[in-house]
Length: 297
Image 1 (cartoon, rainbow, N blue to C red):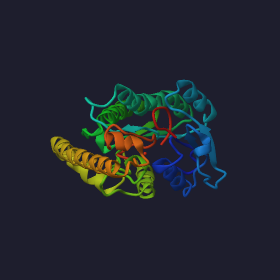
Image 2: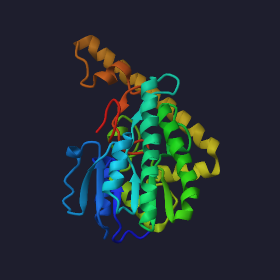
Image 3: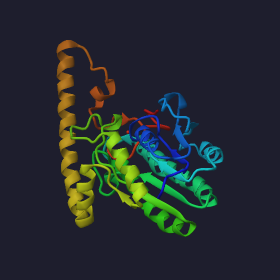
């Protein structure tokens, strides 16, 4: 899709992939960019008059409807806002599981329902959902996150067929590990948000329906296309390694506390290790920024 003079809305635009997407889009001859976040005071100064700040909690249906009224000239909606709670599906708290599903799936669904009529009225449109490679196969240490992203993956596929007749293109974006707040505890190589944003925008312009915006996701996306069970096995092994790393960190922290009486600054990490610890709201992928829950922007 050509982006020249197109008005674009990006949720979770206060940091991570969201902020990087706004900056990347500004390199093109776009119209307005609605930079949405739960708290507009957390939005960076993008230094461009084309950027319009928009207060938006995607779990609040009233705010979503109001956003659709304020941004009624929009042609492209990039659903980036999300949250991730560490923990397995069976052991994590029900509140954490509900938060991931409420934000990642229902929040995205609210946005699509509210903006599909807007895009149709404007003659042509595009909805891009930040999913995750964890939506293609479950990452057990991120059980509820994986389930919510799998739901978005299915929603994206369903809406693609439903909206095609209304001249609305639906894109799924499947990042791997991106270097954001949400992924800072993951001991693995990560791609920069700027690089991911560049490939996402390039994929949108090229008309791609599946976008894998980093080397890891491209490799894992190819594995999924060829051998879905193989990707599941890979994530299961990686998750076990992450769990082991979390337990080791917890043991080291406990040992340090017993010797010094000083807990680490991150009390929750000391108490629970990596698993079970909430991460800020924001992007898809195993990565991070904006709406309701234990730790939000």
